[in-house]
Length: 264
View 1 (cartoon, rainbow, N blue to C red):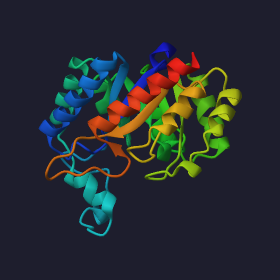
View 2 (tube, helix red, strand yellow):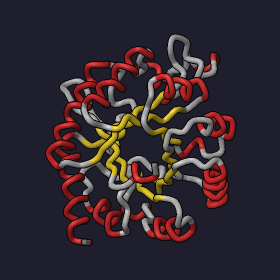
View 3 (cartoon, rainbow, N blue to C red):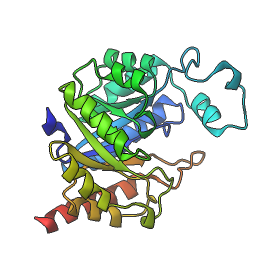
View 4 (cartoon, rainbow, N blue to C red):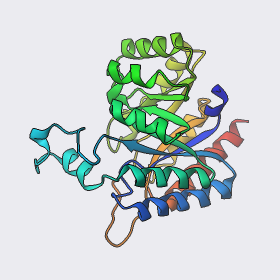
């Protein structure tokens, strides 16, 4: 099952569907054109939070707060469980792996109910042991992001999933949005590969959307598991500085493949 992580491009939709199912379909269709053009193995990743029908993920005292951008963002972009399931089916029917990051235990159950292919653990959850325990009771492959984690945290989570006999990978990640080049510390990838030789090490990037230099460096370090945020702009929808539009995704994938060819 570890081979699922080999040469895998992950297109992270996050909340860029804007809470509109048809727009989510449009993002999937745009990424499918790129996947088919370059004949790559790819997945599209969603984020699940327990927000429907009651936003249990958000404490009741904070649900009406307008001064907290994440609260308003989560509530304004939430989809129903049926809409998420429809999006998962469209992702799979388009030839992608369906990947989901659950941020709470109820969302893990939804991942299993929707039969997602891979479960991703967010950087902010590497110390959330009730959530990690819940995630570990199924046989889905796991991808673990390590942005902001201490080395001891990474040791603990690698040990945990190893003893659970889980198929998993870890991803180097910098939790700055967007992340300037001088903050990326890509040599950390070498340290992770040496420290955990039995674990596939990937890269989850938040650099500027037009940056194609970093992916070449990542590939040159032997990384084949890569993730970036993606979306589609419209007259009303604008992307943040670290989410790539389809043209930028095309250039990103092309740069990775060129670098792989150069490395041999």
